[in-house]
Image 1 (cartoon, rainbow, N blue to C red):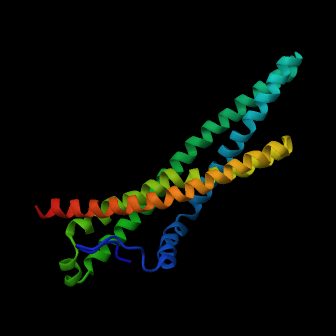
Image 2 (tube, rainbow, N blue to C red):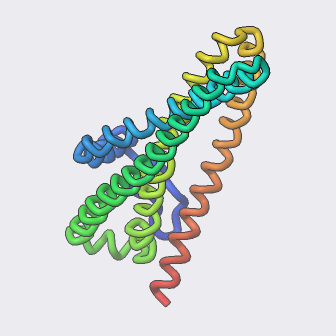
Image 3 (cartoon, one colour):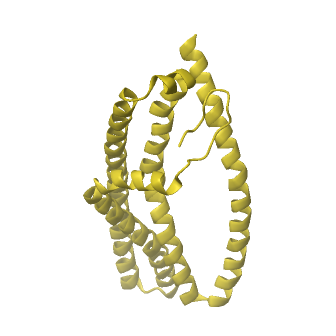
Length: 216
């Protein structure tokens, strides 16, 4: 749907489901790369969950002076940190490649779309706003894929794993923690509504600025 015509306020996508479906088509073409990325994310998450447990066992070994157990914990920690480093590197590389592949195809499709735009559309829309779609909007998609996609999946898996371990250790403290988390979610939800308005206004002003610069 149109984001902003000249002199009008920013608009939502007219067909949200259709927009998401078109976005998913780009991801389907990179299914193998996404699979490798998800495997790297899972390795990073598991390593991050195992490390504190091994650290706790190492401290207990020092307290109990069970040195053989301590050596085993140290070796385990080195292995976990090594896997974490390699998996994090792989995650970053795969996310960057996925982002570039999708953005390349997206920009190619945008150029083809511009070739078939009507004269009426070009006359009623700022050239700078169209340029903003090609540059800033696509760059936002690229940043989301390369930076946020892996973090989102890793964050969800980390939360699930952490809550499970917490319940195994002490369910009473876990319930107290979950109460504070729910309060945080409520506050974050309200803040996100405000931030969406601010980002929408920023996109509108950015389109106006690009249009003015291009026309000058």
